[in-house]
Length: 123
Image (cartoon, rainbow, N blue to C red; front, side, top):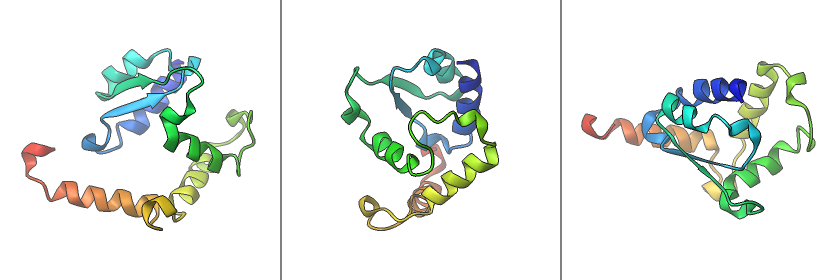
C-alpha cells in the first residue's frame, strides 16, 4: 500500500488540479492508504460497491484494453516503468469511438487548452 500511495501521489500530482477532483476505486488492499492519498493530492477517493464494476465503467473498459498487453493476473513488477509507460502511451494514442474517434491525448490536450482560457480564479 505504501508503494502504491507514493506512485499514485506522484502521478496524480502531475495532472492539472482542475482535472484531478476525485478517484473511484475498487476495494483492493493497495488502496489502504486512501486517506493519505487524499492528503497528498487533494483528491477525494470513493470506493465502488462490491461486485459492481458498472460503477467504474471507464476503468473496466481500460482494463479490457490493458489485457491485450498484460493477461489477467500478470505481475507488473516484472516490467520497467519505461515499458509500462510505453503501453500507456500507445493506449492514449489510440482513437476511441466514445471520444468521437479522437485519442485520449487529443481530448486531454483540448481540455487543458480550455482550462488555460479560463480566468485565473477558476484554476
